[in-house]
Length: 332
Ligand code: VTB
Ligand code: MG
Ligand code: MG
Image 1: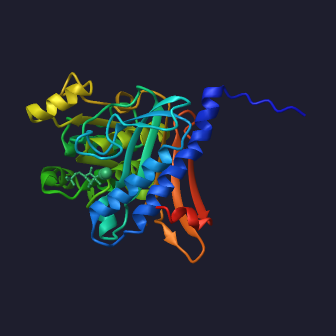
Image 2 (image 1 turned 45 degrees about the vertical axis):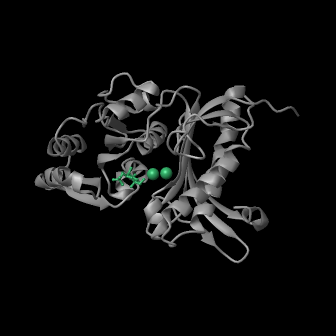
Image 3 (image 1 turned 180 degrees about the vertical axis):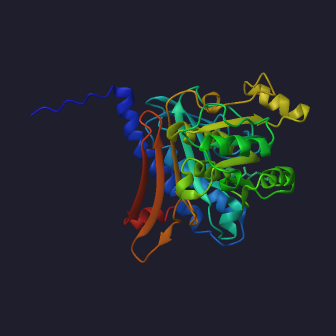
């Protein structure tokens, strides 16, 4: 009996790559997890970077890192512009944050993840490692329900109206930083709740997609631009809205951004401006958090939990893996 596969070759490969990128974030997470609680952010980050790079270089892709660990001169590996993969296969853009929440991992606190995204070549925003203003909500609202330049209080009221609830039923996730004092005060002035996190706004934005489970309706604040693009890829897969603006407050930053193709330094980016084409997103838990369980080292098994998403279908998979050939992990 012959089998007919009705998926075009390019999409078929992309389906296969969905599992391949899980391997990449799994290995990065395991490597970082060995250094949980050691108080050494750099070492944990480096371990994740090394593992991620090694795994990326096994993939059947012609990949270019467009969101990475800084520009070439400061980053020994996974720098922006680095080529990854076996140099055969589809041309893809790669965005990585091998250890998102290095402090969380170093302190063994909840919520650090190993994360990456893959997209059709030339379709991801090339953002320098600068700060970015962000606002995000999940799916199901009319376009423009909240806006980056509206006040936090206004955005809470608009979202509450769209949900048909009182502002006091809204919860906004915010990074706990002094720079967010006005945002926190503005949100609370409406009666809404603020949920503070110390790090980890990629997961933070993803939380907005399932408010009934996470209790988070909206994310507001300034975090890393690389994290913004990774979160945009995730929301492109699962739905939602996001508006972001790079903070290019010095000539040097504007020049760096310009070199990456940013011609309007004040531009507000929606999800489709940051992730224009088909894309995949994966994240594996390093320390247990509200999105994912962390790596568990058992006697003969290493357990990981990964979420992987695909924009073409919007499928979200949670993959709990048990790794048994532990020799291979001793390379990490
Ligand atoms: C956020 C958060 C990251 O950096 O992007 C944040 O998602 C912003 O930077 O997990 P500051 O820490 O400088 O405020 C992290 O906390 C660390 O990468
Ligand atoms: Mg990082
Ligand atoms: Mg990070």
